[in-house]
Image (cartoon, rainbow, N blue to C red; front, side, top):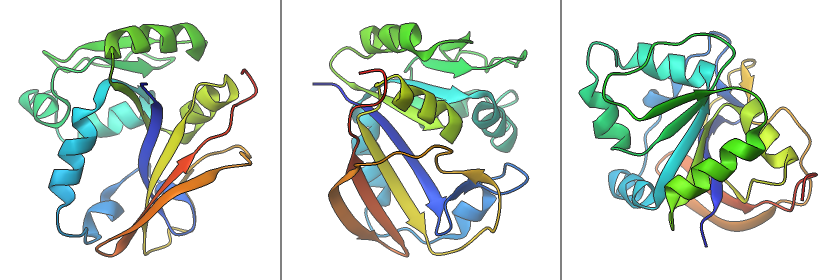
Amino acid sequence: MPRTQYLTATSLDGFIADPDNSLDWLFAVEQGEGADERWDAFMAEVGAMAMGATTYQWCVDHDQLLENPHRWQEYYGDRPCWVFTHRDLPAVPGADLRFVRGDVVPVHAEMLTAAGERNVWLVGGGGLVADFHDAGLLDEIRVHVAPLTLGAGAPLLPRRIEGLRIRSVRENGQMVDIVYDVPAGKGS
């Protein structure tokens, strides 16, 4: 059965981006052997994606996707991606992007249809993921915990979520990968 998953990396003190909304800190952390294969296996199970405007804009800027749209395909393939935003954002040429706003429930239904038998990946940020949780639509949190602190920035999740159940913990180079099953949210 398809799952709605939040996969992200976090600092030890619980931030997914630094105060400048940058993820550059993450690329300095050594991942373990087989990281590319694990990424490929994860992406093979993803049929649709969603991200917030800040995450999308960071991806566009960091990887210069408007000038190099082929990079989107290299990273995400032809998976449709819903971008939740309240502002106009540039579209990466050739990418299957759907700019939306408002309630996550009807959009999630569209995402499940598009994903078919594969999973839905909530790329980030934490506020968007919390909205999915509040609607009872988040099944799993996958966190790569990095051995550093940022002191401030965008939080992993800006809401209290109780009852998470650890499914697995694995060392990944200097990181620790943890997978949690999420209890039903408020909207269930």
